[in-house]
Each structure stands twice: as structure tokens, then as C-alpha cells.
Image 1 (cartoon, helix red, strand yellow):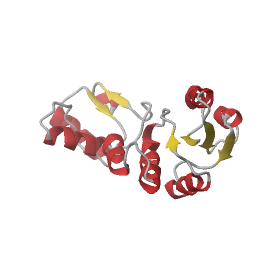
Image 2 (image 1 turned 90 degrees about the vertical axis):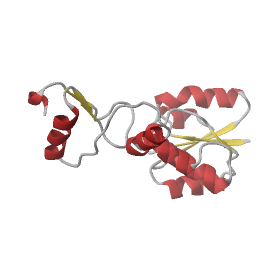
Image 3 (image 1 turned 90 degrees about the horizontal axis):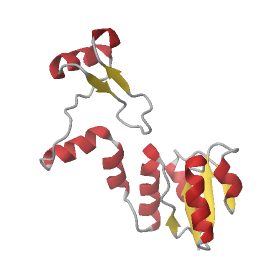
Image 4 (image 1 turned 180 degrees about the vertical axis):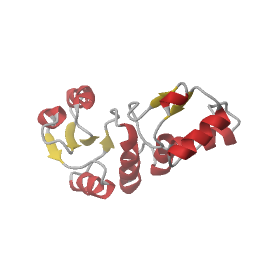
Length: 161
């Protein structure tokens, strides 16, 4: 059975090896042609994983039956798109967007009366300054989409803005 690993960096190697030990044929995709996982996968394809349509094409070409659940961060939405396109079990595109978009996730939590940190969507430095006045300091500034703490900044005082 062919399975797909979207992303083939060091983080995904453990899952690739586990799938192979289970007798699965692993097709791995990563934009870095030197990615470790591409070298150990049964078939390694250097391709940009941000392009959901292209990943879906690969999944269809190789008759993918499942996607390996490996760390993927903000590209979880690509997994959702592939699952929807191929009718696979797993996270849907809509659910993946709800998980990766911090604004949508917070709105869902608030709509279900689940406690979460307050947030303000800011598009520029002036809006960040206004938000810190509204919320108070310290604050955490983070990108709407992203993972792995990339782009996250602590604003402890006015000098940090």
C-alpha cells in the first residue's frame, strides 16, 4: 500500500521508517532535494509542499491510500486538501484551516465558551501599539499562520515595540 509523507525533513524520518517497517511503500515530498526523508523514502520527490494541487496530483499518480501523520505545522492544510480530494480518512481541509489559522481557532474556542487568551488582529506597527494599550503588557506577537514558534515575539515593555 502506498502512503504519502508531506514534508521529508528530519522531523518526518521517524514516521517514514515506522511506515516502512509496517510494510508500507512511502512516497515522500519535500521542496528541499537534499531532505533526509527523500533519501530514505521508497520514492522521494523534490516538490514544493505549499502547492496543494501539485501534491494532490502526486497522491493521485501514486494511488495514495493514506497520509503519514508526521509533523507538518502550517502545511497541515495541504494534508486536508489531499484527504478531501482522494476521499481519505483524516483531517479535512476545513478542519485543518481551523487548526492552523490562529484567528479562526480562537473564534471557534470563544464561540464554544472555551477560555483562551485574548487576541487582536494587527496589520502594522501602529495597530500593534493600539492592541498593547487595549490588552496591556506583556503581550505575545505571533503570525496568524505559522508553527514552530517562528516569528513569535514577546513584548514585555514599550521598548520592545
